[in-house]
Structures are given as structure tokens and as C-alpha cells.
Length: 389
Image (cartoon, rainbow, N blue to C red; front, side, top):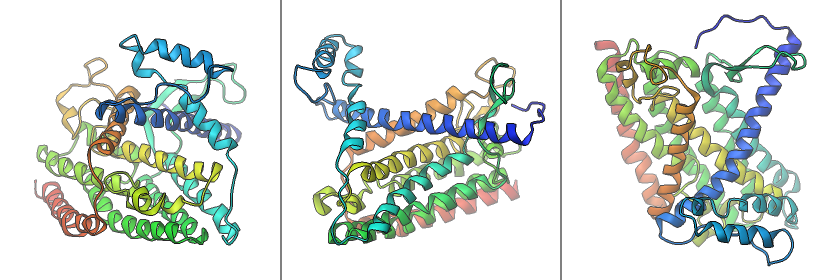
């Protein structure tokens, strides 16, 4: 929400920016392991089988009491849902302590650099994402240097925020391709080539689907776009049609861009062992893992902001029918934004548990024969609504 700007010194600006970056990174590092746990549990429930229930280990040491507690939780209906929650701690320890192996004939420099490129591109995108269009809270007066200053719901308010996000996110494919090539192995190379072709193909309809909200809002600023598209101010009621179509096209392309089922051909374990990261282990593999799940969060955040109403309750510009004077429901809230992001992440897991993988020719057909023409028609409809009505 609009507030009166509080002047800050250069030091305060830098410290506040650093503090916001740390908070966002901590939040992502918490969400990623929780998302991996949720993935196991959701797939287990959907496929009517057990998900994660207990930690690996015997009945001695720290795992013994934890396993006994989690076994007892299974007898309580509500607590059984979170049984096995500490498993993400075991996953983190496993990645940190696993031996880091580099193939003898690999290009060591590029092999090491590739996962760093992927994770930096995935995390750098969060700099332009607006989680709340105003002040979330004020720091305590006793806080060093920045005490009493407002903590904004975004790190940077860039005029071309969406362009920055799309440009930086597309760099992540270099990490995949370079890692596949540097491994000096045929299976990673095939996975890397698949990924390059797939991401280049699906970036076209994805970008065109995002041009619909850009065209309707008349801005590239993340915060401004999310507010205008949610409240529907200045938008014709028919704008809901291209936004509704664009959402499903964008979400489909988002599945392909993050290499998720049914578009997970670059890491198809039944064909390519593990795909482009076959030769990776330890934290190098962990960086690819973090990048994939961080990209899922970014895709969910963009879909939430530009199609589902962002920080407001109703999607596709329907918020205009709720007066701003209505408490809570008529005002922006971080709870709405977070809830919608979590719902789309659940859809990622839901689809993985239900749909089979495409053949590669089918994957390309979907992008070029169906999604691309559909996005062009949808963009024309959006332009017609914007300038003819």
C-alpha cells in the first residue's frame, strides 16, 4: 500500500537491501526442503501409498527416539500428515556429507561452474519479485543502523522487473548445458541437448503468454502490474478472457521450463539414468536440486502475481467487485500471495503423481503446433480488448 517515503542514507539503504536479501534466501532455503517433503507426502496420498514416515536409521542414537515418536504420530489422524517431517534434515545432511566426485575426463572448471550458474540464476530472480506491494512491518527502534525503518515486501522496485526476471531466468539453461557437456558422458550430454531444445522452445509461448498481462497493464514493473491486474482498474471486464487462457498456457510452459512431469525429458531416469546431472554428486548435485525447486517457486509467484490476483483475494481482475473498504478481503495481504503460491506448488506435485511423461516428439509438438498459435491468438484478443473497448 502507498506510504510516505522515509529518507535513508546510503549505508541504511545498503544494510536494508542486504537484510531483505538474507530474509528471502532464508525463506527459500526453508521452502525448498519443505517442498521436497510435501512432494513425497502428496504423491504418497494421491497414489494411495505411504509417503515419508520415518528417518533412515536403527533404534539407537538420535534416529531411534525420533522414529518412535513419528510411529506414534501415525495413530493420530491429523498428526499422521506431518509424520516424517524431520526427513528434510536428513536430506540436507546427506547432500552436505556425500562425497564430491568429479569424473576423470571431465572439464573440471566448467563442471564446477555449471551448478553455480544454475543456482545463481534461480535465486537472482527473487530480487525483482514483489511479495507484498508495500510495507510488511517496521523494524524495532533498537535495531542497529536501520532501526525504525520500514521493511518492504520487495527487494527492488525495478521499472522493467518482468524483463529482468525473464532475462535472468533464461540464463539457467547455460548451467544445464555446460554441466552436461563438461561431464564428458553420453547420458548427461543427451539430457543437456534435450533441455536446451526444450527450454528454447517453451520460452517462446511462455513469454507471449506473459505479454498478455503486460499489454493489459501497460507496464513491466512487477508491483504495478500485480496491483493493476488484480484490482482491474482501467481494465475492460472482457480482459478476464485472455488472462484466463494465458494462465493455463503460462502454467503449462512453466512445467516445461522447470523440467517437471510431464515435461521432464532432460532428466528422464528411465532413459538417461538421471539426465544432465548423472555425473554430479554432493553439493554440486544439491545446487541443481535447489535451482529446480527455486524455479518452481518463481513460476508460482509469477502466475500468482499476473493471473491469480497476486496479493488480493480474487483472480483475473475480479477483485474489482470487492470494495476496498471491506476489511481484510478488500485489502492486499501477504497471506493471499503465499496461499496462492502454495496452491500452484501443490499443482506441480499433483501433476507429477498423475500424468505420464511425453515422448520427445510430442513435447515439441505441444510447444510449436499448439501453444505457440494459441498464445498468438490470445495476444491478439488482449490487444483487441485493450485498444478497441
